[in-house]
Amino acid sequence: SAVISQKPSRDICQRGTSLTIQCQVDSQVTMMFWYRQQPGQSLTLIATANQGSEATYESGFVIDKFPISRPNLTFSTLTVSNMSPEDSSIYLCSVQGNQPQHFGDGTRLSIL
Amino acid sequence: GQQVMQIPQYQHVQEGEDFTTYCNSSTTLSNIQWYKQRPGGHPVFLIQLVKSGEVKKQKRLTFQFGEAKKNSSLHITATQTTDVGTYFCAGYTGNQFYFGTGTSLTVIP
Image (cartoon, rainbow over all chains, first blue to last red; front, side):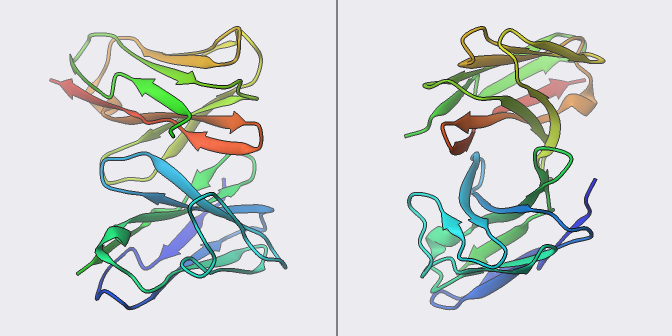
């Protein structure tokens, strides 16, 4: 199965700042996704990262707040913009290859 | 609101007891997937069921997909401490993909 490297693994940020999370896969994959998981909760899909075109966002998530890049089939970034304490969460990228979905280790983000 | 619900939310069992989590969708699912997330870890894919009424087994784990493709269950026989974690179902309703609310399993040695 694909090996996913997600960086940073955790960060503590000041409110009003932005953080970019990187997701690198060791093989080309068609589908890459970004999820948010708040403490003790289930996973919520933020968007599907599309290679060569704009990401497809789920209801409740907008590009201005969560801009996503997908320059090629092995890499994507998610930026959490103008952060507030409500953005404190785990952010996970996942890829769809041989398995329905394979997840990275996640980025634990805390906003002060 | 949440489309895919799981019950129970939490379950504590003595090691060796059985465990079942139930997954219910408000709409028909094209398939159902099950994931396990260990404390502090990320979700790990366990299995996918596609056919109505399908049953699959993985050692002590038995997965079922309902006849109407709106519900599913995961049953663990004779739980072990390594079974600790949160179990999520997930699936597509139309073109929307949802994770279930999850069931957190604690196994008491």
